[in-house]
Picture (cartoon, rainbow, N blue to C red):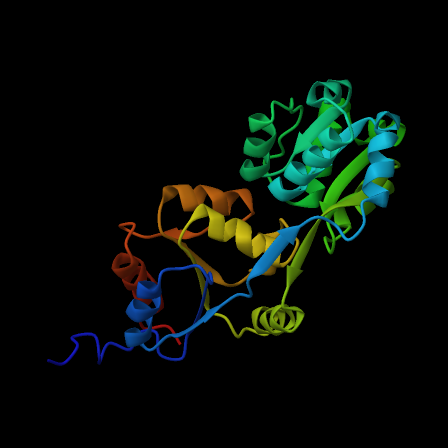
Length: 269
């Protein structure tokens, strides 16, 4: 019997990016519409190559006024090392803590770390503004020192902005993110060159996974101009945490997701 979708080519010429862990059924639903389906490189999260810098930062932690956690992985591995060196989580009550993104907030709350500031955006300027509002204005940042645990290849934009405001800001590697560099370079080229039409996230974890591929919480910038789709509300909420404004599937099923994607591009060229 002929597949009733065999002549439905609403996604002909479109490239759709999905997670490497996405269900195979999603590919089987998208491809009959003419889509080219690709996945982003798989990543591995682990300890840094050396703990020297992290250990020195922890030893001198109380020379800082603030800790800023950009990702849940950085928070998890920083706390793991902090405790392994004989410290108690309660000691962090002496510092102010900023948590960026819902996954990071949940990780810190699970470890009973108090949080003083939760910015409403992952944009570095918004983060600096949120902290500035808390301390009485950006001009007050000049009296403060910040420690920012991060991934091995994370961008330093946040530290640069804090330094421009007169603050002392140090980024220290708390975790290593390893991925296929050739694959990441190729994906970056596709994204910046208009070679990807849409990204489909099937779970909150898939949103976090793509952010880790680029060692960045600024997916809104990385995926600028690319339509984002999410399976369900929890995935949509995760996408919002990373600066994205996705379209939501009518039902949390692969068929509904494929249909929503095809409908969005129907008649667009």
